[in-house]
Length: 334
Image 1 (cartoon, rainbow, N blue to C red):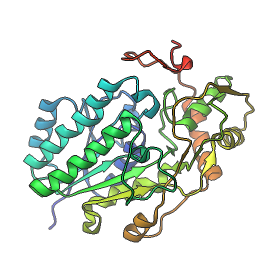
Image 2 (image 1 turned 90 degrees about the vertical axis):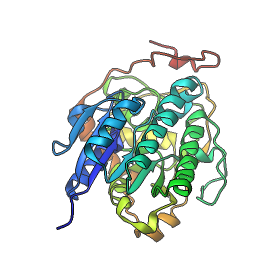
Image 3 (image 1 turned 90 degrees about the horizontal axis):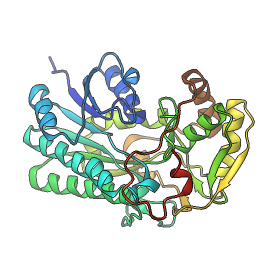
Image 4 (image 1 turned 180 degrees about the vertical axis):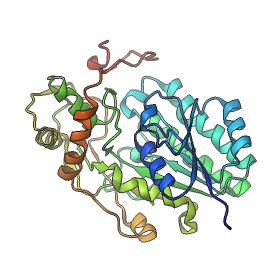
């Protein structure tokens, strides 16, 4: 009789993490969720999973959990994923996104984890010409991307030094149910829906012609969940997400259509960000099979009823900005 796999999911009360937890529970894993609830919600965690309220930066807690549960697999999705804001919260960014990750890697090596699955980001590519490919040398342009790439390199070193198998995914611009609607710094789809429900204008930095390929969460969570049991994926990095790019202006129109609500669009001063960012997915299709791509209008149509049922959430300012110089004025508001 085969032993039931035990999986740790960090950030499992958050957006992508909660979907991965559901997939793992459906696959028969015994799942433990570690989340500090800074961006997630307890009621999003599948009731079959055990929830632990805590942070990956708490090394003692991480060690206790590994010793108690003897995890077979680790799915590391916990991160503070605000690329633009990361310039202004460098210490917070590296503490949470790099040092917290190192705590998990250390524990995984000490306790013989079979596979460590890490969600990185296409932020590691910086301003490289799209579509970004995994064989391109990353040149991240913000501290968030730097931290993600550093963890990728550390996993590579841990494999060669200690034999820790790992899989790295670089998702991009993911949206869907469980997105934190009250986060003003990240996840533009959630921001637009939240603004519409509050009768506020949809705010766009710059002219809105910057392009992204928006990815429905239901298309990527199953792939992430099953990756730890696929030796062909071990030691590899995969872009994962949608292929079709859209301008932010087009996105605003599609969100209004999905919500059945009209709103004004307000263009703010442009911020320092990559203008065009989308990636090639040939590699993930080769290893995992052809990937499902939910059309943007369809995905927004699925998310909209959930957003309305959830209701508008008050957007709060980040409480500890480390550098105020050049901070976008809209982010200074309380």
